[in-house]
Length: 369
Ligand code: ATP
Ligand code: MG
Image (cartoon, rainbow, N blue to C red; front, side, top):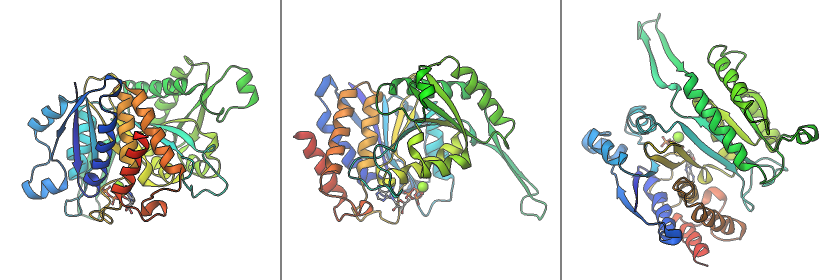
């Protein structure tokens, strides 16, 4: 029996998570996959009511889960940083979820805002480092509040941390071999036996210490993968190219901060925040991994029942891949693809008038069929 922790959280979090769980229920029992849920009341609502963010006791209970499904945490009344640092980053760091995996995949039937680009052009996998960089909270103020104030925020990059992330990216590229077109590869590359590409996205020309380490590690690890082409893009050029020629990207590996930014851009390419799923992975399974939509609590549409549930549904599929039931994950993705390919219900973010529940029901029906 696999124990799955559920943190519905705030805003649209509980609305979309309910649909993710409805889909999970349908694949439960298939492929011998049996699970039980434990719900955790965490987030801004809880903090406003009790002053509690995440206690050690709750953390211990979460640790006993094999995986966690998160909706979103965020609340307009909570000072910035409290929930991010106290819940999201705390779980990512404590559970050593050192990979943030974000597929950017355009489903047929979904409109990308990039003119003349379609599903064949947009299918990349962003591997974002998730435990280091500017997110570790190293830094401080001197002479705070004075005209001479200095604020420092240090990017921490360790050889071991960079290496495990880069290696994961090359392994993912290998797993993609054989599927889809040869992204970013020239005829000469293919003649040389290359099958896929990994692009390192950094800023080596300015961040000459941190990203020198990234580049050296990328080159060294990459030499162990002669079948995978090594590509490099500065983060600014990468943003431009993701828009102008997204078809040249296959697997991208990048730092915590740059990954945060370029995956919001990626979400837009694939049809919006309502479709973008992610996994915070502890690949070795020494602690639970956590799966969540890329979007936040979306306070502007919360409570209206119109949030797109597909990011949560696709996060459930990523969770099932991680839990070693890839057939169930594939079934969910096929159902989502079917719903999006047909002129069925769409939430307003995709130009429709349907509710969260109606779209969730359409996926459930496609799964049943
Ligand atoms: P948070 O502080 O929790 O991160 P946020 O203010 O950053 O929240 P997001 O949740 O990231 O907001 O949303 C950004 C925009 O995308 C908002 O306009 C929101 O309405 C829209 N959005 C986010 N999630 C969805 C969804 N599931 N369906 C439709 N629109 C969404
Ligand atoms: Mg946000």
